[in-house]
Length: 162
Image: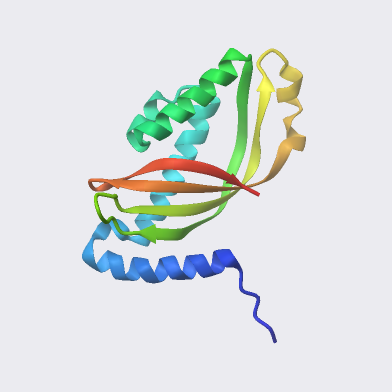
C-alpha cells in the first residue's frame, strides 16, 4: 500500500506542529480561533464585496489590503461591472503556514480556503448574466495571508489558487 502525500498536506502538518509550540506561548495561535477568524472574514468579505460596501471590512483588513480591494471595486464600478456572489459554502479551511514575528516583522499565518458556490463578474446592466447564474456553480481555492496586530489577525493578502 502506497501513501499519497500532497504538498498541501505536508504544509498543514508542519504548520500544525508549529502551532502546537506557539500556542503554549501565546493564545492568539489557537488553531480553532484562527480558523473561525478566517471563516468570519471570508463570509463578511464576500457579502460586502457583492454589495460594493467594503467600509465595514476596514477593521478586519490591513490598510494595504483594504486599499487594493477598494481600488478593485472602483475599477469594476468604473467599467459598469459588479461582483455576483451567491450560495458560497466553505468546504475546508486549513492553516498552511505560520511564522512568528522577528526583526520588526509581525506574526503571520496563511490559510487555504476551499469553497463552492457562484462568484463571477457581470455587467451591471445585463440582468441575464445574473439571472442565469446557476451554471456558474464551481469550486474555488484561495490562499489568504494574515498579519497580527495586537491581539487580532488582519487579512493582508488574497490569492486565487487553481
